[in-house]
Length: 89
Image (cartoon, rainbow, N blue to C red):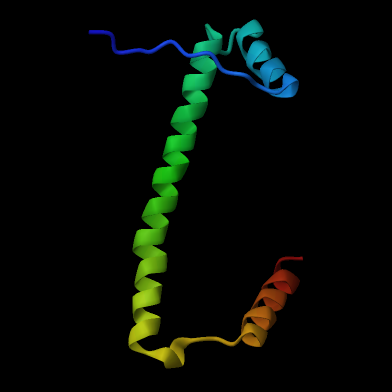
């Protein structure tokens, strides 16, 4: 049984040029390898996002639900963001 499946895809010209350049420079052996690597990166990003949502956002939501005094107003959030922006500028 085959473990691969042939597909035909359509890319915008700028993306197609990037794929071809990756092969032309020898970074990848084929256009398929470029696409496979891009999909692996996308899957890793999706896993990281799911993990963040589950572990950090979920637990923060649970804590807020248990103790609503932890909530911030929109003005408090804006003030904290402005302070952080000022500190990093």
